[in-house]
Length: 156
Image 1: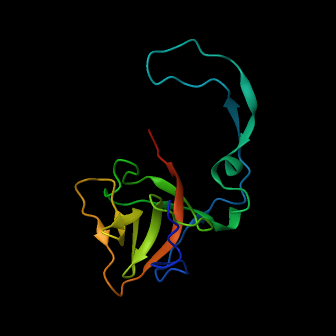
Image 2: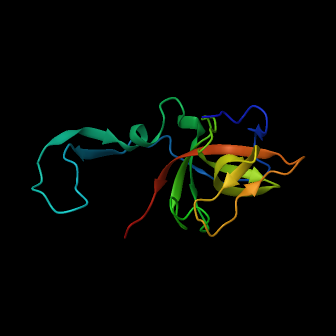
């Protein structure tokens, strides 16, 4: 895996104003069962409960609390991974690597895409094959606002 923040990618304060909701500060404790749920045919459930789980500890990399935010996604370019209306957890303290899903700013526009390369140039690659990858042109800079670590989806 290649680290991108070195040459082509600038990591700095965004040119676009964001209003993220910080995850830090909550200490919501939720019971956690040790039994895994099968997505195929049902199996008898085990009644084993593991120690309670703190959502903050589960969703945020320890030490990155002040750099972690939730953003709501709009659009369909990442449809196979992240859907319109999903909330994503973004960690600004992580370095973007080839294949990472990132929140990026290109030409003062926010986007969520996978970071990669096309013909030796940095590219923002959608997961939805109906969308075209964006290759950075000479003179353009890519600002990585943060790396997406989780996707929160309402299934109701």
